[in-house]
Structure formats: C-alpha cells, structure tokens
Length: 326
Image (tube, rainbow, N blue to C red; front, top):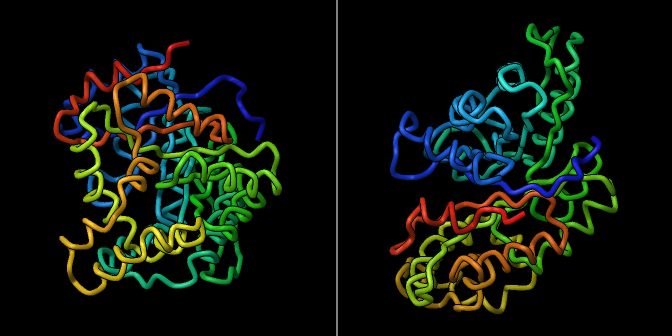
C-alpha cells in the first residue's frame, strides 16, 4: 500500500447518547472541520459497518475504517462479503481493520471459542486478501477451511487491510501480512516501541491509534472517571499482558491483585494517577492537541480520537476544540 502523505486526523464513531439516524450533523461537522477519517468499532454498541455505511453517504470525502471487526464473529465468506460491500459503498475510501478482539467479546458475549487468536487473525487476513481479488478460494487454513468460495461483489479498488495488534508477535504479523497496524490503549511513549516493530517488517506500514480523549480542565474528574474506563481494559487478559510487556507490572500490580480478589472499588484506587495521564488524553483543548501530537511524533500515521463521555465533556465542543488546525 502506498501511504497517503497527507496528515490524517480521525474520529471514532458513532457518538454515545444519540441514535444513529440523528448523527448526520455531527458526521458532517467533522468533515467541514477538516477531519479526514471516521473509524468504527464493534463491541457492545453499534456494529462496525452500519455507521460507516451512513457516513459513506453523509460524508463523501472522508476515509472510513473499522477498528476493528473481530476475526471470529463473522465466518470467512460473510467477512469477505461485509468488507466488499462497504468497499463498494465507498470505493477507494474504506480500510478494513481486522483483529482478534478479546475473550470477553468473542467467548463470553458471542459464544465462540477464543482459541489461537494470532492464527485466527492471520488466516482471516490471508483469506480476505485472496477472496477480495474475485478468485475462487479453496484453502485449508490452520484455523478454518474454505471450499470453493468466490466473491460475487469484487471491490473496484484494492481494499487496505490493517491488523489490530498489541504485543510483538501480532505487531510483526501486521507488518508482514497486512498494510499496517491498529493500536489501542497505549501511551504516546509506547508508540515508539510499537511503531518500530511494525516498521521493521514494513517501512510503509500505516499505524492507526485509537486515542481516548477527555477535553476537560478538571484533572480530578478526568482521573477518577478515567480509572473506571481504563480498568475495563486493563483487566482483559490480552491488555494486561500488553501493559506487563510495556513495563507497567509494578505500577499496576496491586490493582490487578485486588481486582482479581473481587475488591473492585479498592482496585480502582490502586491505579496510579500517572497511568491515567499516560493512557487518556485530558486537559484543555490545546493540552489535548499537544498530547495527541506526541503520538504522531512517535509514529502514529492516523490518530483516531475517541471522545470519552466524562462529566464536563461536551461532545460538540470537543469536536470543535480538537479539530485539525492546518
């Protein structure tokens, strides 16, 4: 993939607190303000594609991406159909972000065994690269097999595929097997390590980062509310392993121990303030901008901001205050 040289400035959609049909004005405001990308997720809210389908019509200049579609929750043929359909709705503007997701989403919520996530993601990426050409695919992958599938809606233009990655194995696989990596819940300083690993495999790789932002000058509220938000991820095994790898075992050890023991309130109090300051961008808009820029300086090619619905954070003001300035 030839990386677009333009600076990119993305936003996570849809926004909390509004039905999808009511978000047209906000999507279009993002476009007018100079945001370049809209990135969806797929966990417990809207599915990953419907908001982008709406955006494909409402915001005809914006790039659209999934961050991410789980590699388990759609079968291979349906995944190819889903990606091809979105690419057909927004030719040349869609990026397919694929990842393992987590045991919570895959196993606890969808009843699918969360086994061999590295191989499942790699195999889905390999299958998609073959299927999206329109050629018939008959292949025995390590985690699934496909017999005689031919996609009936072939994208007019190649569809970039990115892989959600945390630790070194997935990061290297993202660089080798796809067009780049999607990263999540990490600090600006962490990016330097992550981007280097991906770049060793593919110097042209894109690095998309979902960056959680709470534009509020009330530091105490940002930290207190941020601990609730962060704990939901810090205790998911794949994220816990990532932060251990990033050297946070000492800082978060007491938190993890008390959480595992069932003392959730006490566990929250054990998250150091500096961890929230590293993982959640907060402060006035100028402070937030400077913090986001550190992610870019360390290797992120597209920040995908996610506005946190904290007390005192007004979404529309945040959209305006965090907009690109050039």
